[in-house]
Length: 338
Figure 1 (cartoon, rainbow, N blue to C red):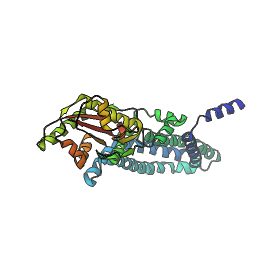
Figure 2 (cartoon, one colour):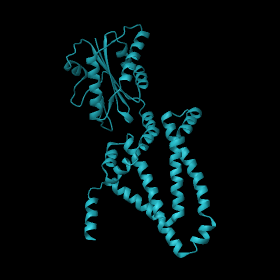
Figure 3 (cartoon, helix red, strand yellow):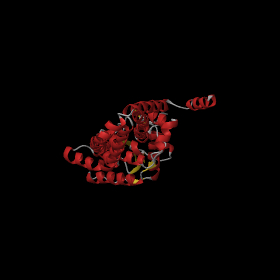
Figure 4 (cartoon, rainbow, N blue to C red):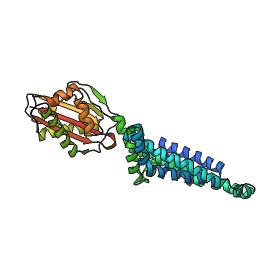
Protein backbone atom coordinates (compact mmCIF):
# COMPACT_ATOMS: atom_id res chain seq x y z
CA UNK A 1 0.00 0.00 0.00
CA UNK A 2 2.82 2.38 0.91
CA UNK A 3 4.61 1.64 -2.37
CA UNK A 4 1.43 2.44 -4.32
CA UNK A 5 0.99 5.76 -2.51
CA UNK A 6 4.67 6.61 -2.99
CA UNK A 7 4.39 5.89 -6.71
CA UNK A 8 1.26 8.06 -6.96
CA UNK A 9 2.82 11.04 -5.19
CA UNK A 10 6.00 10.66 -7.28
CA UNK A 11 3.93 10.94 -10.45
CA UNK A 12 2.00 13.88 -8.94
CA UNK A 13 5.27 15.82 -8.71
CA UNK A 14 5.27 16.11 -12.51
CA UNK A 15 1.78 17.63 -12.59
CA UNK A 16 1.25 21.30 -13.34
CA UNK A 17 -1.71 23.54 -12.53
CA UNK A 18 -3.63 22.31 -15.61
CA UNK A 19 -3.40 18.71 -14.37
CA UNK A 20 -4.65 19.76 -10.94
CA UNK A 21 -7.53 21.72 -12.48
CA UNK A 22 -8.52 18.70 -14.60
CA UNK A 23 -8.50 16.50 -11.49
CA UNK A 24 -10.73 19.01 -9.67
CA UNK A 25 -13.16 19.03 -12.61
CA UNK A 26 -13.28 15.23 -12.69
CA UNK A 27 -13.87 15.11 -8.92
CA UNK A 28 -16.77 17.51 -9.36
CA UNK A 29 -18.26 15.26 -12.05
CA UNK A 30 -17.80 12.23 -9.78
CA UNK A 31 -19.86 13.93 -7.08
CA UNK A 32 -22.45 15.06 -9.62
CA UNK A 33 -22.67 11.57 -11.12
CA UNK A 34 -23.32 10.04 -7.71
CA UNK A 35 -25.99 12.64 -7.00
CA UNK A 36 -27.74 12.13 -10.34
CA UNK A 37 -27.58 8.36 -10.60
CA UNK A 38 -26.69 6.19 -13.58
CA UNK A 39 -29.74 6.76 -15.78
CA UNK A 40 -29.77 10.56 -15.45
CA UNK A 41 -25.98 10.84 -15.82
CA UNK A 42 -26.11 8.56 -18.88
CA UNK A 43 -28.83 10.73 -20.40
CA UNK A 44 -26.65 13.81 -19.84
CA UNK A 45 -23.66 12.09 -21.47
CA UNK A 46 -25.63 10.97 -24.53
CA UNK A 47 -27.22 14.39 -25.03
CA UNK A 48 -23.79 16.06 -24.67
CA UNK A 49 -22.21 13.74 -27.27
CA UNK A 50 -25.11 14.21 -29.68
CA UNK A 51 -24.91 17.99 -29.23
CA UNK A 52 -21.16 18.03 -29.84
CA UNK A 53 -21.34 16.05 -33.08
CA UNK A 54 -24.38 18.06 -34.20
CA UNK A 55 -22.25 21.18 -33.80
CA UNK A 56 -19.44 19.63 -35.87
CA UNK A 57 -21.91 18.54 -38.56
CA UNK A 58 -24.27 21.50 -38.90
CA UNK A 59 -22.18 24.54 -37.93
CA UNK A 60 -21.85 25.45 -41.62
CA UNK A 61 -25.62 25.52 -42.16
CA UNK A 62 -26.28 27.89 -39.27
CA UNK A 63 -23.13 29.87 -40.02
CA UNK A 64 -24.23 30.56 -43.59
CA UNK A 65 -27.66 31.69 -42.36
CA UNK A 66 -26.03 34.12 -39.94
CA UNK A 67 -23.82 35.52 -42.70
CA UNK A 68 -26.75 35.85 -45.10
CA UNK A 69 -29.35 37.40 -42.81
CA UNK A 70 -27.31 39.14 -40.10
CA UNK A 71 -24.10 39.96 -42.03
CA UNK A 72 -21.95 38.39 -39.31
CA UNK A 73 -18.29 37.83 -40.35
CA UNK A 74 -17.72 34.31 -41.66
CA UNK A 75 -15.23 33.38 -38.93
CA UNK A 76 -17.54 34.36 -36.08
CA UNK A 77 -20.53 32.85 -37.89
CA UNK A 78 -18.93 29.39 -37.94
CA UNK A 79 -18.26 29.45 -34.20
CA UNK A 80 -21.73 30.77 -33.35
CA UNK A 81 -23.26 28.24 -35.77
CA UNK A 82 -21.50 25.44 -33.88
CA UNK A 83 -23.01 26.50 -30.56
CA UNK A 84 -26.48 27.08 -32.03
CA UNK A 85 -26.57 23.57 -33.54
CA UNK A 86 -25.19 22.04 -30.34
CA UNK A 87 -27.64 23.97 -28.14
CA UNK A 88 -30.70 22.94 -30.16
CA UNK A 89 -29.76 19.26 -30.16
CA UNK A 90 -28.81 19.39 -26.47
CA UNK A 91 -32.25 20.74 -25.55
CA UNK A 92 -34.17 18.27 -27.72
CA UNK A 93 -32.08 15.27 -26.61
CA UNK A 94 -32.35 16.24 -22.95
CA UNK A 95 -36.15 16.58 -23.12
CA UNK A 96 -36.51 13.21 -24.86
CA UNK A 97 -34.05 11.29 -22.69
CA UNK A 98 -35.27 12.78 -19.41
CA UNK A 99 -38.77 11.54 -20.24
CA UNK A 100 -37.37 8.03 -20.52
CA UNK A 101 -35.36 8.38 -17.31
CA UNK A 102 -38.35 9.70 -15.39
CA UNK A 103 -40.53 6.81 -16.53
CA UNK A 104 -42.40 4.59 -14.15
CA UNK A 105 -39.51 2.09 -14.26
CA UNK A 106 -37.23 4.53 -12.45
CA UNK A 107 -39.90 5.50 -9.92
CA UNK A 108 -41.41 2.06 -9.33
CA UNK A 109 -38.37 -0.23 -9.51
CA UNK A 110 -35.14 1.64 -8.80
CA UNK A 111 -36.14 4.39 -6.39
CA UNK A 112 -38.29 2.08 -4.23
CA UNK A 113 -35.56 -0.53 -3.80
CA UNK A 114 -32.73 0.66 -1.49
CA UNK A 115 -30.19 -1.73 -3.06
CA UNK A 116 -31.04 -0.80 -6.65
CA UNK A 117 -31.10 2.86 -5.70
CA UNK A 118 -27.62 2.71 -4.15
CA UNK A 119 -26.24 0.80 -7.17
CA UNK A 120 -27.81 3.36 -9.49
CA UNK A 121 -26.13 6.20 -7.59
CA UNK A 122 -22.67 4.60 -7.66
CA UNK A 123 -22.94 3.66 -11.34
CA UNK A 124 -23.82 7.29 -12.08
CA UNK A 125 -20.16 8.14 -11.57
CA UNK A 126 -19.14 6.32 -14.77
CA UNK A 127 -21.05 8.33 -17.43
CA UNK A 128 -20.54 11.53 -15.45
CA UNK A 129 -16.76 11.10 -15.49
CA UNK A 130 -16.89 10.58 -19.27
CA UNK A 131 -18.85 13.83 -19.58
CA UNK A 132 -16.15 15.63 -17.59
CA UNK A 133 -13.38 14.14 -19.71
CA UNK A 134 -15.09 15.09 -22.98
CA UNK A 135 -15.73 18.67 -21.84
CA UNK A 136 -12.15 19.04 -20.55
CA UNK A 137 -10.75 17.64 -23.79
CA UNK A 138 -12.82 20.06 -25.87
CA UNK A 139 -11.68 23.11 -23.89
CA UNK A 140 -8.03 22.00 -23.82
CA UNK A 141 -8.05 21.33 -27.57
CA UNK A 142 -9.39 24.84 -28.19
CA UNK A 143 -6.54 26.28 -26.14
CA UNK A 144 -3.94 24.08 -27.86
CA UNK A 145 -5.08 24.80 -31.43
CA UNK A 146 -6.17 28.44 -31.27
CA UNK A 147 -3.99 31.52 -30.61
CA UNK A 148 -4.43 31.79 -26.87
CA UNK A 149 -1.55 33.09 -24.76
CA UNK A 150 1.75 31.24 -24.88
CA UNK A 151 1.47 30.61 -21.13
CA UNK A 152 -1.88 28.81 -21.50
CA UNK A 153 -0.80 26.85 -24.57
CA UNK A 154 2.46 25.66 -23.00
CA UNK A 155 0.70 24.81 -19.74
CA UNK A 156 -1.75 22.56 -21.60
CA UNK A 157 0.85 20.89 -23.83
CA UNK A 158 3.26 20.35 -20.92
CA UNK A 159 0.65 18.89 -18.59
CA UNK A 160 0.66 15.14 -18.15
CA UNK A 161 -3.10 14.67 -18.33
CA UNK A 162 -3.96 17.60 -20.60
CA UNK A 163 -1.43 16.72 -23.29
CA UNK A 164 -2.74 13.14 -23.44
CA UNK A 165 -6.33 14.35 -23.75
CA UNK A 166 -5.40 16.73 -26.58
CA UNK A 167 -3.39 14.05 -28.40
CA UNK A 168 -6.32 11.64 -28.13
CA UNK A 169 -8.58 13.87 -30.23
CA UNK A 170 -6.86 12.93 -33.49
CA UNK A 171 -8.71 14.42 -36.47
CA UNK A 172 -11.21 16.22 -34.24
CA UNK A 173 -8.63 18.91 -33.50
CA UNK A 174 -8.60 19.79 -37.21
CA UNK A 175 -12.40 20.13 -37.20
CA UNK A 176 -12.30 22.32 -34.10
CA UNK A 177 -9.54 24.44 -35.63
CA UNK A 178 -11.52 24.85 -38.85
CA UNK A 179 -14.59 26.04 -36.95
CA UNK A 180 -13.00 28.39 -34.44
CA UNK A 181 -9.87 29.73 -36.17
CA UNK A 182 -12.01 32.26 -38.04
CA UNK A 183 -12.78 33.97 -34.74
CA UNK A 184 -9.08 34.66 -34.29
CA UNK A 185 -8.67 35.78 -37.91
CA UNK A 186 -11.68 38.09 -37.79
CA UNK A 187 -10.38 39.53 -34.56
CA UNK A 188 -6.93 40.09 -36.08
CA UNK A 189 -8.22 41.94 -39.18
CA UNK A 190 -5.17 44.10 -39.98
CA UNK A 191 -2.08 45.36 -38.18
CA UNK A 192 0.67 47.62 -39.44
CA UNK A 193 3.17 50.27 -38.34
CA UNK A 194 4.12 53.49 -40.11
CA UNK A 195 6.75 52.85 -42.81
CA UNK A 196 9.03 55.64 -41.55
CA UNK A 197 8.56 55.04 -37.83
CA UNK A 198 10.40 52.96 -35.24
CA UNK A 199 7.24 51.82 -33.44
CA UNK A 200 7.33 48.26 -32.12
CA UNK A 201 4.30 46.13 -31.27
CA UNK A 202 4.78 43.19 -28.92
CA UNK A 203 3.00 40.07 -30.15
CA UNK A 204 1.42 37.85 -27.52
CA UNK A 205 3.07 34.76 -28.96
CA UNK A 206 6.26 33.42 -30.48
CA UNK A 207 6.24 30.98 -33.36
CA UNK A 208 8.75 28.60 -34.93
CA UNK A 209 6.39 26.55 -37.08
CA UNK A 210 5.53 28.51 -40.21
CA UNK A 211 5.68 28.24 -44.00
CA UNK A 212 6.39 30.53 -46.93
CA UNK A 213 3.17 31.40 -48.79
CA UNK A 214 4.49 31.50 -52.36
CA UNK A 215 1.04 31.78 -53.93
CA UNK A 216 0.15 34.85 -51.87
CA UNK A 217 3.56 36.36 -52.63
CA UNK A 218 2.88 36.08 -56.35
CA UNK A 219 -0.61 37.50 -55.88
CA UNK A 220 0.62 40.48 -53.86
CA UNK A 221 3.31 41.22 -56.48
CA UNK A 222 0.60 41.29 -59.15
CA UNK A 223 -1.59 43.50 -56.95
CA UNK A 224 1.27 45.96 -56.39
CA UNK A 225 1.97 46.30 -60.10
CA UNK A 226 -1.74 46.53 -60.89
CA UNK A 227 -2.02 49.45 -58.48
CA UNK A 228 1.01 51.13 -60.07
CA UNK A 229 -0.41 50.65 -63.58
CA UNK A 230 -3.68 52.25 -62.54
CA UNK A 231 -1.63 55.23 -61.34
CA UNK A 232 0.35 55.38 -64.62
CA UNK A 233 3.52 54.37 -62.74
CA UNK A 234 6.15 51.96 -64.10
CA UNK A 235 5.80 48.42 -62.83
CA UNK A 236 8.33 46.92 -60.43
CA UNK A 237 10.70 44.03 -61.07
CA UNK A 238 10.69 41.17 -58.57
CA UNK A 239 14.10 40.93 -56.90
CA UNK A 240 15.19 37.62 -55.33
CA UNK A 241 17.56 39.22 -52.80
CA UNK A 242 14.89 41.63 -51.60
CA UNK A 243 12.42 38.74 -51.37
CA UNK A 244 14.87 36.81 -49.20
CA UNK A 245 15.31 39.86 -46.94
CA UNK A 246 11.53 40.24 -46.63
CA UNK A 247 11.01 36.56 -45.75
CA UNK A 248 13.79 36.55 -43.17
CA UNK A 249 12.38 39.62 -41.42
CA UNK A 250 8.87 38.08 -41.28
CA UNK A 251 10.30 34.89 -39.81
CA UNK A 252 12.32 36.85 -37.26
CA UNK A 253 9.23 38.75 -36.12
CA UNK A 254 7.35 35.48 -35.62
CA UNK A 255 10.27 33.83 -33.81
CA UNK A 256 10.92 36.72 -31.42
CA UNK A 257 7.33 37.88 -31.00
CA UNK A 258 7.49 41.48 -32.20
CA UNK A 259 6.15 43.57 -35.09
CA UNK A 260 8.35 46.45 -36.23
CA UNK A 261 10.63 47.75 -38.96
CA UNK A 262 13.38 47.66 -36.34
CA UNK A 263 14.52 44.38 -34.79
CA UNK A 264 15.04 44.13 -31.01
CA UNK A 265 18.73 44.63 -31.86
CA UNK A 266 17.84 47.97 -33.50
CA UNK A 267 18.61 46.73 -37.03
CA UNK A 268 16.71 48.89 -39.53
CA UNK A 269 15.33 47.94 -42.97
CA UNK A 270 18.21 49.84 -44.58
CA UNK A 271 20.71 47.89 -42.47
CA UNK A 272 19.16 44.59 -43.56
CA UNK A 273 19.24 45.56 -47.22
CA UNK A 274 22.86 46.75 -47.00
CA UNK A 275 23.92 43.60 -45.11
CA UNK A 276 22.55 41.52 -48.00
CA UNK A 277 24.89 43.38 -50.41
CA UNK A 278 22.02 45.02 -52.26
CA UNK A 279 23.06 48.35 -53.81
CA UNK A 280 20.51 51.15 -53.48
CA UNK A 281 20.07 54.89 -53.31
CA UNK A 282 16.41 54.69 -52.32
CA UNK A 283 14.75 51.99 -50.22
CA UNK A 284 11.59 51.44 -48.24
CA UNK A 285 9.66 48.78 -46.35
CA UNK A 286 5.97 48.04 -45.80
CA UNK A 287 4.80 45.64 -43.08
CA UNK A 288 1.41 44.07 -42.44
CA UNK A 289 -0.01 41.35 -40.24
CA UNK A 290 -3.36 40.04 -41.47
CA UNK A 291 -5.37 36.84 -42.09
CA UNK A 292 -4.83 36.91 -45.87
CA UNK A 293 -3.25 38.81 -48.75
CA UNK A 294 -6.45 40.64 -49.75
CA UNK A 295 -6.91 42.21 -46.31
CA UNK A 296 -3.21 43.01 -46.09
CA UNK A 297 -3.08 44.77 -49.46
CA UNK A 298 -6.35 46.59 -48.83
CA UNK A 299 -5.02 47.87 -45.50
CA UNK A 300 -1.72 49.02 -47.01
CA UNK A 301 -3.45 50.86 -49.84
CA UNK A 302 -5.68 52.68 -47.35
CA UNK A 303 -2.63 53.91 -45.43
CA UNK A 304 -1.10 57.04 -47.05
CA UNK A 305 2.48 56.20 -46.06
CA UNK A 306 2.34 52.61 -47.27
CA UNK A 307 0.53 53.55 -50.46
CA UNK A 308 3.23 56.15 -51.16
CA UNK A 309 5.88 53.40 -51.05
CA UNK A 310 3.84 51.19 -53.38
CA UNK A 311 3.33 54.02 -55.89
CA UNK A 312 6.75 55.70 -55.60
CA UNK A 313 8.70 56.50 -58.78
CA UNK A 314 11.90 56.15 -56.73
CA UNK A 315 11.57 52.38 -56.70
CA UNK A 316 12.17 49.92 -59.53
CA UNK A 317 12.56 46.65 -57.61
CA UNK A 318 10.54 44.91 -54.95
CA UNK A 319 10.83 41.81 -52.80
CA UNK A 320 7.73 40.37 -51.17
CA UNK A 321 7.88 37.94 -48.28
CA UNK A 322 4.75 36.35 -46.83
CA UNK A 323 5.07 33.88 -43.98
CA UNK A 324 2.02 31.85 -42.98
CA UNK A 325 1.73 31.45 -39.22
CA UNK A 326 -1.34 29.21 -39.46
CA UNK A 327 -4.05 30.17 -36.99
CA UNK A 328 -2.09 33.27 -35.98
CA UNK A 329 -2.36 34.85 -39.42
CA UNK A 330 0.20 35.85 -42.04
CA UNK A 331 3.16 38.21 -41.80
CA UNK A 332 3.70 40.44 -44.86
CA UNK A 333 6.85 42.35 -45.78
CA UNK A 334 7.43 44.45 -48.91
CA UNK A 335 11.03 45.57 -49.55
CA UNK A 336 11.49 48.34 -52.12
CA UNK A 337 14.68 49.60 -53.79
CA UNK A 338 15.64 51.63 -56.84
